[in-house]
Structure formats: structure tokens, C-alpha cells
Image (cartoon, rainbow, N blue to C red; front, side):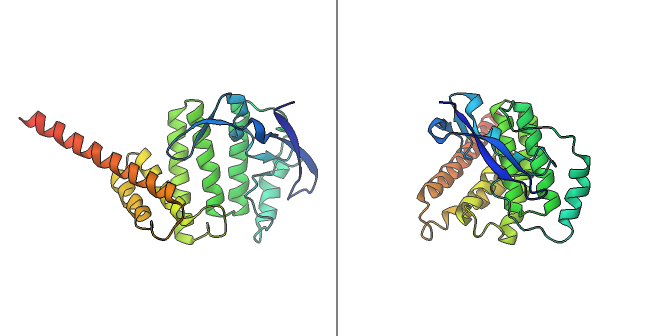
Amino acid sequence: MNELYDRKISCLVCHQPYTTKKIRSRFLRPIKHDSDFCSYYQSEDLNPLLYYVSVCPHCGFSVTEDFSAYFPPQTFEAIQQHICQLWSGHNYSGKRTFQEAVSTYKLGIYSATLKQEKHIVLAGLYMRLAWLYRTYKVPEQEKRFMRLALQEYMASYSNDDFLGTHMSEVRILYLIGELHRRLGETKQAILYFSKVIAKKKETIETGIIAMAHERWQEIRSGENSSHQHGDERLK
């Protein structure tokens, strides 16, 4: 059986039907996870990150399953002007390379921005693109898109636009803390991990609470270690 299958989609902009590849669930077996939920697979070709964004070959409008069907005023016209009228007709409906996948994320981010999608939707795009760069060992771009993901997660939390999605308050607070930590901003990381830990009696997501506590302890241990090294150098 082929690992990939064709999923049928109707474009939200031009309403034309098209197909996009997805990986059959039986082949999605992660071998490990990072502390920000990035998953790794036995074969890089079977990483679902490669197929997260669907690109309409007819008009170029690109979506994820998190996009809403609603178009705020003037956004439909902006998409037609800035994407559809300039579309070259490239087809991303087959098996994708890493570079093709990167291109689909950038199209998805541009489409989401013009459509004025929720911050949580843009955060998901930026975060997954950062994971993709991490998987293929491109650290400068990974850091760039983690920073953009952090900005969108913080905006989403401030505006409560994550409510009603798969993202819980505890999880978004944890991700904000973890992104701060990975970007070397330990004070902000501790602040957000503390917010997560403070909600331990309000949530059933005990795993997230435990992860926040682990990260908090790691930062504290690192700080104590660096202080000790500093004291030794002064002797």
C-alpha cells in the first residue's frame, strides 16, 4: 500500500476542486518528540509537516485545515489581486521535497495574512515551518520562524483567539514559555512556565504541567551552574 493518498479539496477562493497528498495514519509513527512538540519519524519522506499546507493549483490560494471559511471584508479582493492574478500555476499536489514544502508554508502564511486569519492559525504555520527547518538542520531559519511563532502565540493569547480551537490555555502558555526558553530569553520563559504551573488545579492536562515544571527546573539548574562557575573563576 502506498504511504500517501490523495485528499480532495474545494478551493475557498476559486471553488475549483483539486487533490493534495496526505500520509496514511498507519504510517505516522513518531520515533521521538522535542519539548515543544516537534515530532520525528523513521523516514523524513513520511513527515506530515511536508503536507500540512494545501495549495490550489488553479489560483494559488493555500490553506491548512485550521483556516475558517469566512473572509473578512476586502480580504477576498486582496487575495485575488495579490495571489490569484499573479499565480504561475505551479502544482504542489504530488510528493513533496523539503524545498517544495517550504514554498507551500510561505504561500500558506501569505494567504493567511491576506485573509486576516486568527493569530493562532498563523502561529501554527510559523511553528511547523520552524520544526521543518529543525528537522532538516537549518538553525538560522528555525530560529527566525520560532520568533515569528512566538509573536503570534502571544498575540493569540492576548486576544483570546485560541478559544474554541484545539489549543488550550495551558498549552499556549507552555508554548510561549518554551519558545522564550529556546530563544535564550530565560526570564520570560520562567514567567510563563510559572503561569502554567499555577494552573495545575484547574486543568486535566497534567502532562503539560509536568513538562513546564521540568523546563523551569532545567533553567534554574542552568542558572545555578553558571553562577557556581562564575564564583569559581573569581577565586
